[in-house]
Amino acid sequence: MKRQIKTAGLMPLTLLLSACVTTGGFMGGSSGGVSVGPGVAISDEQVVAGLPEGTPRLDVVVPVFNPGLPEDPDDYREENVWPELRRAEANRFAMQTKQALEKTGVFGAVRVTPDAKATANLYVLGSIKESNGEDVALHIEVVDIAGKRWHRKTYKHRVKEAFYQDLRNDGKDPYQPVFTEAASDIAALLRKKPARELALLQSVADMRFAASYSPGAFGRHLKRKGKTFTLASLPAANDPMLVRTRAIRVRDQLFVDRLQAHYEGFSGRMDESYSVWQKESFTEAKAAREAYRKAMVEGIIGAVIAGLSIAVAANSDSRTSQGAAAAGALTSAALIAKSFQTRAEMKVHRDALAELGESIHADLAPQVIEFEDKTVELTGNAEQQFSQWRDYLKRIYEQEATPQVRI
Image (tube, rainbow, N blue to C red):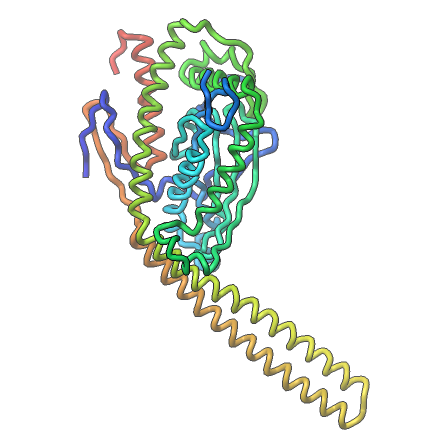
C-alpha cells in the first residue's frame, strides 16, 4: 500500500515499528564513551519543574530498545523468546520509558527514535534482558551527546499475584514500576548536574549536528577523543551556514515529533493482545518457576538420602542397618522419580508459554508500508526510513548551499 505525502507538510509516515530493531542493536559500550548522535567526520534560561531556576531543559532521545534476542535462532525456543514479540516489546518499552520520563517534568522534549543517531542532549538506551509475564529485566544506560556515560543499571521487577487481584489495577501495565524506577533515577541524576554543564551539552549538540552536515565548517569547533566530544569553540551566532543547519535541524525534529504518533499507535494496537499475554504468561511463568524450584529441592533431598544410605551400608554389617539403607534407597528413588515428574510438569508450563508466544507472534507480525511523494520516497522499516530521511535532509542542505545544483 502506498501513501502520498507532501514534503512541506511532512505528513506522518506509517512505518514498520515491530521490526525496526535487530539482534545486533545497542548493547552498551566501553567506559570511555558510547557512540550516539549524528555522525561527525572529524578527528579523534528556562524554569524546569523540580530544578533550580535557570536550569536548561535537555531534549532526550529513547531509541527503540535492543530486543535481547539470542544470537542463534535455534536458541529462541530454548530460552522462551519469541522474536516478533520481543521486537514489539522493544518498541513498546521505549514508548513506556518516554512516558515515564515525561512524567518527571524535568526534561525538554522526549522522543522515541529508531536508533541512537538522532540528535538530542541525552540518550536513554535500553536492552531487554527478560520478559516472561512474571519477571521483567531491562538494562538501561544513559549517555549525553558528548559521549559521557551518566548511568548504567539493570532494572528488575517481579509481578505479584496481588496485582491481578486488585480491581484498581484494571487497565494498568504490571511492568510499569520498572519504567517509573528508571525514570526517577535518571531525573535524580539530572538534578545533580550544574546548569552550566547542561547548557554546554546543548552547544555540543548544535555543533555535532552542524558538523554532520558540514564537517569542514564546523568540525574545528569540536575536539574528539574516541567516542567523547568536547567543545573547542563556537561560531558566530549569525554565521550563515549555522543558520542553515539550524533550519535543517528544525525539519529533522519535526519529522521525529511526528514519528511519535506512530510509536504511540503501535503500542496502543498492542495493548489488548499484550495484556492478555502478560496475564496468561504470568500464571505459566510463576508455575514453571515454582515447579523448577520444587524439582531442584526434591532432587537434592533424594541425592542426600541416597548418599546417606550408601554410607550406612558401607559402614555396617547389621541387617537393621542394611534394611535402613535399602529403605533409604527406595525413598531416594521415589523422590528422584518425583523430581523427574515435576520437571515434566514444568515442561508442560513451558510449552504453554510457547503457545502463548506463538499466538501473539501472529498478532504482531511486521507490516511493510511503502509511501511515496514527488520529492522523496522512504521505504523499509523505521530505521531504514529514518536513515533515508537524514540523507534527504543532507541533499536539501547541499541544495541550499549550492542553489545552482538541481537534485
